[in-house]
Length: 299
Image (cartoon, rainbow, N blue to C red):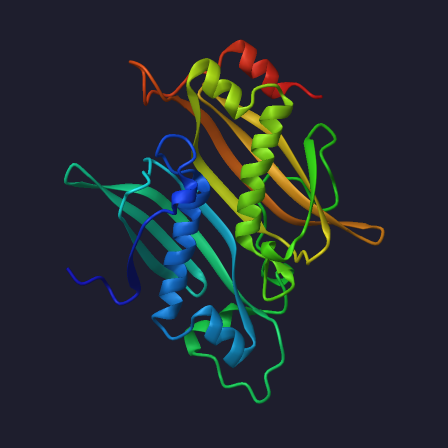
């Protein structure tokens, strides 16, 4: 069946790097596949990142991604990505995999893309009509309202776990600005550091209980530019526990600009555990009182 004109189909596979526990692939690599699929939508319209940068002086950036992950991905899965343009810069993406001859959805997501002015191009040609509404001077100019209840810019939750990291060149796009996937990696790392700080590291729960992390929902949103060599203060806090099955956590990222504290990104993650071995393998684990006390503790 031929897909509608506004839909792009991309066949891809998760990177081997993401198979960290057995052969299951972590949430970060789901989002990497989504990124590749959206880039292919642009490339099929002769507007890939290289052409946009050199011909038009524009930097293509994913600035907001949200996804539900209803099924697992394995290291050898062949994934069919379906990218549908809903309005300029806004996409819906589904990742489908085959399970015993039956196609199932492993991810349902929404992606927002912007074109950031990166460099001056002498007498730049006109952008294609469908891309003109994506142009912005910087990331802050693209920002939509954040979700209700999230921390306002410049205000840090004093009860949150915190970690700082310096922006390296491999976190950046176009020689200067932190890219979306760097915040995806930061979310993965700050959760890991938070759990270790609470005495319930991934390694400990894997060794003692055969539990592995499971992420069923995630959102990563850029709010303002962060740049090469800046130091990013990253915080993480657990906000809610759902039916002893998963905890909802929030990450916020900040940089100091003189006397100001600027929030550059925010993220949400719904994180639980599954049993990886024995007769209960694959079943969601219940968060007991000891584990819940560790999650809520402040150290």
